[in-house]
Amino acid sequence: MARRPFMAVLLCALATTPAAAQSESANALRGREAAAALMRGNLEQAIALYSEALEDKALPNDRRAIVLNDRGVAYARRLQHKEAIEDFNKAIQLYPEYAAVYNNRGNVLLGLGAVKEALKDFDRAVLLSPGYAAAHSNRAGAYMKLGQIEPAIAAYSKAIKLTPNSAAALSGRGRAHLAALRPHGAIRDFTRAVTADARFSSAYRSRAEAKMLIDRNEEAIEDFSRAIAFEPRNAEIYALRGAAYLETGNAASGIKDLAKAIELNPNSGVFYAARGFAFAKAEAFEDALADFARAIELDPRSPKPYAYRAWTYRQQQQPELGLKDIERALKLDDKSAEAYWVRGEINETMGRAEAAVADLRKALTLDQRLKSAAQALERLGVNTRVAEEPVAEANFERWRVFRRGLQFVATTDEFPRLTVNLEMVGAGQPRILEWDVKKPPFAGIGVLRFQSGISNGEETEQAAIIDLQSNSVISVEMQRQGEKVAQWSWDDGKLVVATADGITDEFQLRQGKPKEPPPQVQARRPEPRKPKTLFELLFGF
Image (cartoon, rainbow, N blue to C red; front, side, top):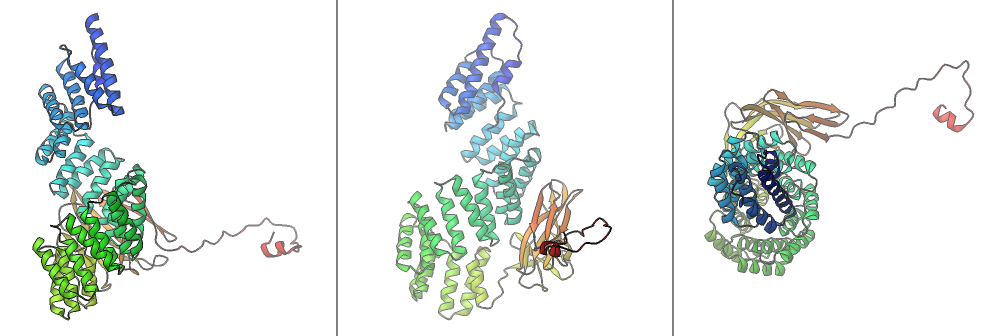
């Protein structure tokens, strides 16, 4: 929580009498001791010292407000929320222009779930102090809790502009991009966060989640491992790494990680359901069924263990049992994508192709990231694209733009297996501006430039770097932000992009050809001499 140092305020006042000077000195000492205790985490001592300072009847209102704010911070850290808010309220009555106290009260209210009230406090703090980066960042967090992603990104961007190396603000904006299904934008922010603070474990974890969205699962496993190194008791990270292992086909490592997650949190039905699914993929069906039973016991209202158990019954050639579990899952949640996916696969097994396709499409409509449903549709020879709406005046040459749910995507019949997510950074809709297929030594690399909305009053453009051989997007770079334009350097298989938002990204796209050594210029000799050794014969020395 941001706060103005109590000591600095006390020392700047002028004493008018020797007695006042002595009182001022005593208050300054208490303030220094209280701040030190707060920094050490000795909250009880800090509260006692701040309380002593407040007993001084001659303390001016502004200084009294600062002491109340600091004591409120100590109370908040002790989770004494009622006392903290009371101190913040008194401080605001005494010093209504004090931005930090609004920010701090907002943080407590946010933690208590009073999000709208917290947002009002952050708004007030920003109004009083427009350069208050922490308040902008906290306001963004409130927007996130309200599901208002674009305002959150704008607020985080303001905080980052004020403090470019704030790992917390960068990671926060990354989470917002991730929530908006903009994994490449998220990865760039998370990378900046861990560059600013190499021990920021949550940014490694979040970057790994973003990489899983674009099938970079091996890289995701590396990032989850980094996060685990800093948080070895965090069960969720083990479970996420286990899921990444499953995506790579390494069921044994996935089961091991999920077992560790269960060891750390044995009362999580989610972890048992996930391990059960991993066992089922490894064809350890008895272990799988035992885990599903435990998951249902711990969380009987969750549809996932029923859906996963149904898939297991399908693998055991017992589709009728599977359909009974699907019926239970859909009664619990009629929007369970996993339930529709599994029922689609069961229908496929039973020869009901039309019903299978309908269920699988329904699953993808509910969750576009459900790869198993997409793979099942492809197996049935069905187009996996769901509910796409053409975007007028957004196309370019053979490229076509569609709205898919909350996202915009671009496709071209030239590369039918390629879909490019046009990641927006602001209000508006995309429009493709340029398509450039590179020549050797970058053959097989394309760059798709597109308008990406208006952010903080500035028009933006992004550029997707595409590997045409693997039909995948390597990165999405900020090409233009207002009047700032990115600088691209292509040299010997390596691409360096100094982006419009102040980041320099580097990519080894193709193996460069070895450079030929410069020609040797020899000094003229009066007469050429005959080489006397094999070394001289071969190398001209």
